[in-house]
Image 1 (cartoon, rainbow, N blue to C red):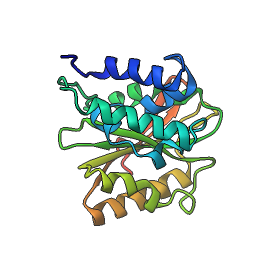
Image 2 (image 1 turned 90 degrees about the vertical axis):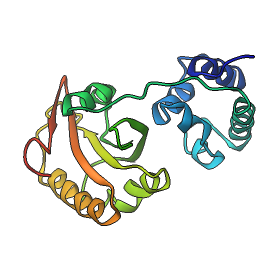
Image 3 (image 1 turned 30 degrees about the vertical axis):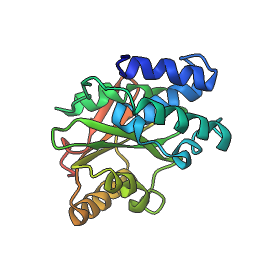
Image 4 (image 1 turned 180 degrees about the horizontal axis):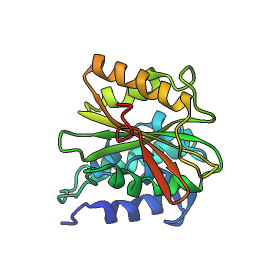
Length: 201
C-alpha cells in the first residue's frame, strides 16, 4: 500500500492543480499549511482566500485530500521554535516583501509550528491588526501559544511605537483567551529584532 507523506501529497496536489511544484499557488498553500495535519484540515473557504484558487479548484483540492485520508501517514517532523533566531530562520522569506505582512505562527505545547497565516498586509497599527483576526485560527486549531511577526520593507527592523502598541494589545488578549504571545519578531534585511528580548513582552 502507498504510504502518504508530504512528498506524495505534493505530487498529488501538483497533479490536481496542473501546476509546477514551484508555482505561486502551490508554494502559497505549503507556506500557509506546513504540516500534513494542517493540509488535511484545509477547507474550501480557506483555499479560496489564496489568489488564483476559485470555488472549482478549491473543490478539486478538497476532494483530492479526502482520498489521501484513506492512506496511512508517516511521522512528520514539525519545525520547532527554541529561540527568536529559530523564528527568524523560518520567516526569512519575509525580508524580500515590498509591503508589510503581519504573520501568525500557531504553536503546540512543544513550540512546534502548527500553521502559518498572513492575517494583514499594509502599514501596521493597533486599530488595523485586530485581535479577532489574529486569534481566530489559533483558537480554532487549539494552539498553546503564538509568535507574531512582520517585516519592515525599509530593511531596518527597529520597532516603531505602533509595533510596540500592537504587541502590548495582543499580549493582553492572549492572556485572556489562554494563548500566550511568546514573541513578536520584526524582520529586516538579513536581520531581525525580538520584542521579547527588548523587554516589550
